[in-house]
Length: 313
Image (cartoon, rainbow, N blue to C red):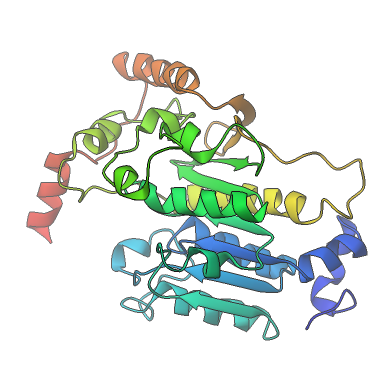
């Protein structure tokens, strides 16, 4: 096991204390989904010194992941994401513990997957709200923070659900606390709830494509800049959560729901806002006005664009 005297951490001490480093080393982080933001987050936390991970993801890397994920490359296409993650972390820190669940987060393994974790990142698919609900409910049972990080364009957002807060994952996503998992699995997530920030430069045709998709084949568009930003602000929030017991009182508090923090590398701004439909609509209105007056660059994520690329490939 690494210690606070390990040379890998020597340059960290310009920004945090030995006590904080010790807290990171002894922490265990659970990550539900390591196909994008979750992979980058975990790698950053491993470099920061987190010594134990529990990761769950049933998927393999595909060529479409290569545009944004460190673990996705020609040599790993077709391999289980959790296996690639484990190898990457152990290459950084051979003394780390990395337990993997190749079946992903399920009703039968949620408690085991999160056992001993001091923090959980919910990086599950928005199309599977029951997975996020399982993670959130187990986090409340364990009394640990449940952190959601999402990239959107050249930007990313982060928020945490406190174990005892009235602002739960279910409330945020418009789900009922009384609904069982079967009922929740039949629900679809309203993007206006989970995307409080819409970058003003967004080509809104991409969102229309997502909203109108009835096949489930259209994924949320994602680029490496947004994934890197998501892992950056997510790992900072993890630092604040994991070191709360030993940090100086001068450290800022984590961002708790219903507040959400976002950072946008393209717009060169960062804000903390209240996550709500009204916040979403306000940002959406700005993007719509810009698009109406042809101020936004057009992307290529319409059904016609996708069909043309399929024919050309």
